[in-house]
Amino acid sequence: MSSRYNCIIIDDEYFARELIVDYLKEFPEFIVVGQYKNSLLAKQVLDQDIPIDLIFLDIQMPNETGIEFLKKNKLNSKIIFTTAFSEYAVESYNFDVIDYLLKPITEERFNNAIARFKKAFDIEKKVLNFKEQDDNRSRYFKIKSGAYEYKVYYNELKYLCSEGEYVRYVTSEKNYLVLGSLKKISEQLPDSFIQVHRSYIIAKSEIKGREKYTLLLNDLTKVPIGKTYRQEVLQWLKVFL
Image 1: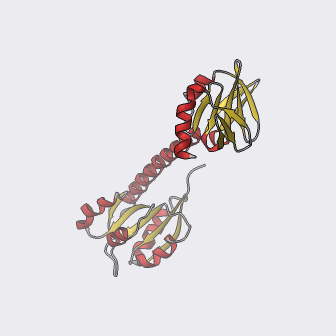
Image 2 (image 1 turned 60 degrees about the horizontal axis):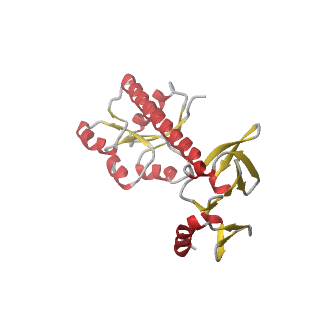
Image 3 (image 1 turned 90 degrees about the horizontal axis):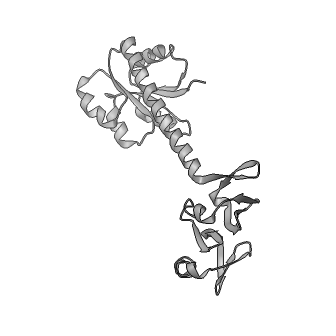
């Protein structure tokens, strides 16, 4: 499914706005949300929850120029300047605009600007998708228990307990018994976990209190503090608990 793009047109000249609308008929994926003769009217739609992907923005307008409008407002929309004045070109690129179209705008030049916008938009979308996938990967890990593979989220993991050649993963929903080494697992866990015993790694957020050398967890589970880890654990408790 191809992308859809919301756009608005800000230009004090009626025929300039109509020309852009006419050119956009060749691009049905573009939806003209509105066209405005000044930036104050356009601001009303920009203040709403409607995402605007692209703004066709004239520079020389009464009351407020296109450049003044950009200086005053932090916008997520891409910008294509439309103007009859070439002297603004250098300043306009300080705003990382997609293109600068000089009036009268030819259809060929307009189409090139649209192609540049779509390329920039698609690249940005791919980067955001990659970051989102990367963030999702950092929030969970996968384990194999028996014939099944499970996705375990770090924020649901209460503690891990070594049981011989296996490790028990205790989460808020269920437990998983997995063949493996607690030592190897400890190297992969984020700083939100702390090893308190050679057989236990605990989510720091699960620690409710301490009774001498025994930790009390939120679910009232009691976990011993091993001699090897005692100094580090007690020091952490002194600061954070």
